[in-house]
Image (cartoon, rainbow, N blue to C red; front, side, top):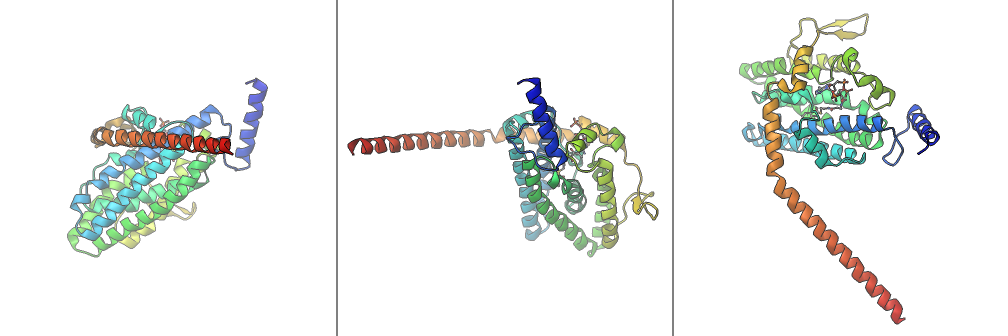
Length: 331
Ligand code: FAQ
């Protein structure tokens, strides 16, 4: 392609972004835009699939049939979110198998939050309330992301995440109306998950290496710090209604800013978890690898079935066209 032709394509791409229109899979896009999308969407997809582990551990230990059914449905929804996101990524020319390979080789990431253990059943409620709550804050603006397939996947995901958040809140509210031991279990769980939930939004803006470019392209619509603030402002009244304390002595309303002030998360801890040194990184990856290996026969069977069906369809259509030509010849 000539440099002039490429400039024309780039100008068209930039005009689409400036109009806030969507880029679609067959549109021309700069390689760096494609790479950014693959990086972010794949990381998001891997997070949904690895995110099934911490809560999944409690399916067999749910305290009632009702709670078991709710938890099963939630964990299954997360698998669905992963699949929509892998499909969105496939429209950029990279297959789910390749993305899984990159995750297993440690060349792609997943969210830090899933590297923390779930120590009590209250954690199921806290994950719903805080982790899905943070996910919603982060993901509602992504419904307006500049890449069409990602934005459309996010609409459905956000509806389901809102439902998950209410489910978690309802579970915690039920426990808070129970015994002293149940209330203490909720508080202990909130104490452990509060700071890691704030870290889900990524490093502070000044250290966020991708934000400026992603925001200029309309991939991200808000900065990490803006969304973190939105989450804190949204969550404080919910904590009051629930009757739990958020473990931050610096947390207070600031009249002048019209927002809550809050303490600094431990950014060293986030860096360590992203590096692979969090409490459960090794366990999560071990489990993901084992699940991938155990699933090999399903992938083989599905591929064999697909190629047999494709072969049958091809010979059926060859037979049909031979019949048509024979009939045409006879006429
Ligand atoms: N964990 O320059 P930035 C869920 C990495 S889904 C791990 O600020 P960016 C549903 C980042 O990749 C949760 N790594 O990066 C659910 C980058 O490294 P790279 C997942 C992190 O992309 C609920 C480097 O640090 N959600 O919860 C994290 O502009 C319950 C520098 O960071 C999404 O993926 C982190 N927390 O902003 C499921 C949402 N933060 O890639 C089950 C979509 C940063 O250059 C149960 N993603 N890093 O090597 C996003 O919005 C963005 O990618 C951010 C990071 C905001 C996560």
